[in-house]
Length: 454
Image 1: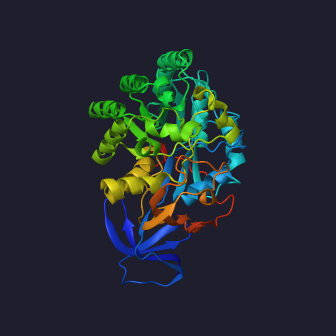
Image 2: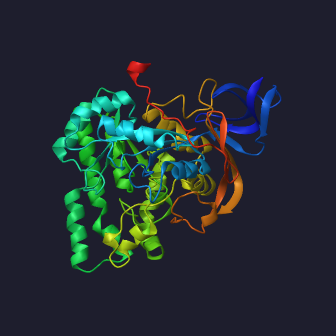
Image 3: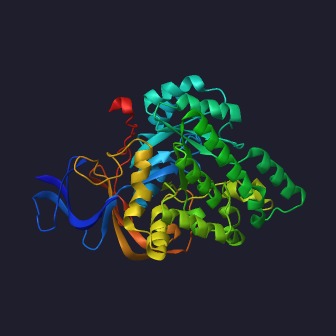
């Protein structure tokens, strides 16, 4: 007898959609049958009329634990993820102590493991002087590494020589270096110019971090990857010109990928007047025309995957920029609304194919970060991670529906068509139609499967 049967669902994988029944034993998918073949199971869920998709994977989230837990922690963050259909979170290294050493990474694993209700992977930080720690962190299970080209208050930026060295040192190890690409000199110059000219309203913020700052940095990072043979990912790309650069270098054989985020596909610079400090992010929101161009790249398959870049602050922290927008910390909430938004805007409104949605929301991130096919696919032997998704249900984003520790979002009062009915992690339901039912500590630390491990 199977532990769980999900029957009559529209099973959506990256290469096919079909009606069927999924049978789970323990934490794995054990069997998939046509709807008419119903086998004995301890529990049965009827998914009639709903999609059953591989659990969503968020390749870019900041859950602020340890060190910044006034604004979010691993329990509230993974509850929010579960409510958004996310079964695996790839968490970035902007926490304290900074996970730039093996001991700090181990401390982080010990700190967050008792809190997680969904599975998680952890990135290590690349800093100007931690080359000797990289191999140790890979041995512990770091999924990837993160580097900043511009100044960041949370993680030391690397200069060009250090970045080139880090990419080269990771080449051949099968590990991706994810890079925040903005030209620091351009950002500093134009931000200071905005302040000198007293152009400090929310609508001015993107002019302090112009598109060329991102475009130039993406090109530079791509050249470094081409020179070294390293694997890089362009984090949170906001500009179509950046995607075009990545596409060009892919054709030259460079091992490069690019992600974007919901706010670069569903918001634009005009929204800053209403959102104020709660619309400030780095890179900043772009023009409506650029948003449309970004969607063209999504529909053409030029964007590899989508991440929330969930990065929250307290109301008081965000309010620091109320009189000068350049004083507000940059970051938006978004892990809970990420994939319902993309489904609504992409599938419902822009005719994105469901199979391509699965690739963007799960499969391609799993492949890039070496956790496929355990994650990112519904097939016999894979982890029983899946989301039952009601594509027709309309709902409105309200404070009482959010599991964030800080109850703000740039999407407040927005109507979305597409609702997460159930989120299942390794065979157990952790979220059920508006309610968290998973237990703290159930979420598992997931290590990458590198070639030497296979």
